[in-house]
Image (cartoon, rainbow, N blue to C red):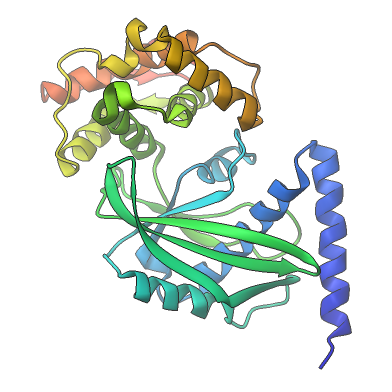
Length: 306
């Protein structure tokens, strides 16, 4: 049976999202993906399992700043408890058919697939893929779910900003300190093999845009390294050295990341970014490694702890 009202709403949403993309000079497809993520999170937040998931990854920048500092098509979540691919596939299919106020989207339950992943050999997780439809527009979505990490300080519930005038998703969020700690641990663990330029960029942005308390960040670093069984470095790790930032291959990887990332800030060299985040990270790393209290304050933009 046809649904003219639903088609009209979908068309209206499509038009408003296109206007938003033009006004913000954003890629229309990325705006559609963000809308799909937003409405999927809304359904997740209404589910009985909402408290079992914590938002992490690049979408947190939307919460903290109202905008995405780099283009992303993925949604990252931390699950409180381990779950199989079959269980997660079933759960996300249930979100697809959840009854909610019409937002123009149809999530296709039959499109939901789940498969085990191991990102950069760091930790196991599950990748869920699915498709949503907004009228005749197809919106592919990817959700990466990790397990077992610790969030220090603890995750706090917050609203996810909406693109239009629909109810906001509400769910628990990673702390900025834990985001920094996990990205730092990946840098130390991967060493020369590190190609995750997004981690360098994200930490640089966080240090530029937010203030940090030294004790909070140092505790988050210590807890993350302990949970992931990674030894805290006694000095600057290779990823924060001139040897890394001046390596021809790493510079090429950085330039490729900058080119495809549609970044919000002017292009900056890898060496500049590495120098800045070394100044930001080494004092709390040293305090964590030596089990010492670190009570300094990092003002927004630094350039040094006070």
